[in-house]
Image (cartoon, rainbow, N blue to C red; front, side, top):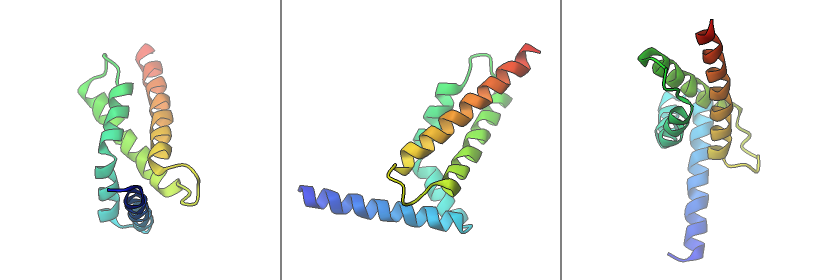
Length: 111
């Protein structure tokens, strides 16, 4: 594959991504499931990064649910005309949200 083919493929992938984001915003569960599946490794890596050793199984379920809510909000709030890639935007949103979640969790555990 030459450089032009890579640019075309990247452009096509970006167009498909933007199409799926738009469909998900319009209520398509199928599009949202596609996005969650595509970004599952990113979501899981953030969950692993922010999970604490003393978390129970229920706490892990809670952090996983929280990360999915944050991801869905990222889909809804992403500016399609922004210069930042969606994956980076989603990562920043999830990371910031999970930092807040863990802080709240730590405060509850100290009580």
